[in-house]
Image (cartoon, rainbow, N blue to C red; front, side, top):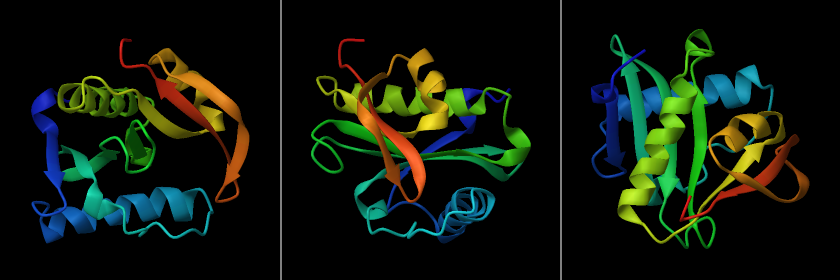
Length: 153
């Protein structure tokens, strides 16, 4: 398992071209090619996000983007949580999500945290304290559900 020093935070103005290319490549490989889902990943939201990059041996193996309250939802939010296929089932996805939660808790301590979770990952997010809200819905032809982690949890 990596240690915390492998996490790198950036906003859109500080991420390098190489890091951004790594991020877009990973998101494309997983969300578009692996999941066979044609959707517009470049949604002009990256400019409003903080970006968490997880490198191991100079390879980007994980990523998430987080938003302050009022951008994607009324609450702070996490999106595009992704782990390279070669590094799954090793706890990296949990570490990325926990680091994203920590960042949002430190920067927006009174805010809930909302995600649009792929429904197949509900148990993963429930184990981290998120609670389901509403019904399952289709987002980019994949079942999703809104989930929220309350500010005091």
